[in-house]
Image: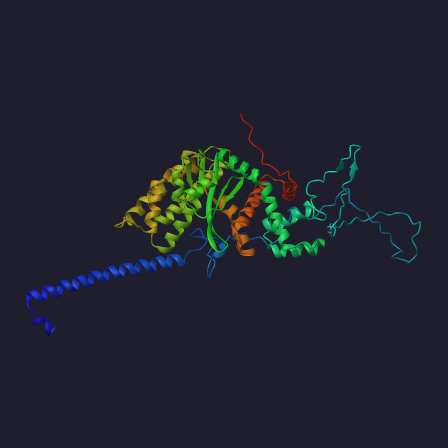
Length: 473
């Protein structure tokens, strides 16, 4: 202080200016560090309830979920509820008669004793599987002209010794649908059937099935372009140590996959579903999809997770809680309208939650003004999306054919993530694309209620199942 008293007025002003500049620099640095801390806290706090992360990625602790209210009933089957046991069949495959050897009372023999009824007990079991060898003898016949003609071998009988289409279908089913690693699939087949197949043979069956499904995959994509409402999504996958992007397009009856090296417009064009599509696409807010002419329906589940994240980061803020509740109420109204066969939510029912949603967005915008520059906070970006894309967000309220969420697309992507967790990454893009083509085929088969093993068998034998095409009206 004594040194300051000796300074002139001009020198004191210089000190004040220097201190003001230092304080401003420190304030800016504090603001930067605060933003970094908030971003790290947001990142560490992400889970399946407030982001797009799957439940399996929840770290340290599972997100708290609302406990179900106690019903007052004891656990287990309730009195008067119908049973769910196995029922007797009228025509069993085999009947084995059992006669008592002696009287349980006096011990006398029962030969010629009068019949007094019987008790029927049935056992359901599967036969032990074994390889059944079928020999095909391709006879030759010599014609009088001197030519020798050999009988044509059936489809698939293309070597001195080979495995048949049933075993091939089982191998494809185990690896592609049940996510059994190739090595374990070969062991399982050997243990169950006695067929000593190699891992190379198992992998070859997937490639063979995929080759037979090129036209079916093209048909599925064509049918997707004709659907009124489709869902699309994408996720990153690891193929041969490199990051690639898996795209899915789907309906409740169709599934198609595409595996490019990017998630941009080139990849979407290669997929071939969105270019020229004129229906409604249920999706997330990825900007690349905005370049296509289709009507957009933004996924409500994504919005609710984002609002949940903001509510957790800002416990005193009311607008994210109100917006989330309003969206949930609208989703429940949409479900009820769909169950009643209504084309949309009745306007008088939708009015109040719509008012609450819009008011919450206005309050949030006032509490989160735009920052200088292009980069904005997560909350501000969410609020601007809720404000500027109301038609896309609320499309499910005016069209009952449009779902509130894009969960169907996430469900169709989940098996690929499951495959990676169980079997590890694909070693080559060619094998990954073959696996995905077969997976899309199986998914579509199941959505139509058809038998999967039969459909795989038919594909392997050159006569794959095809989804029905709509009849022109």
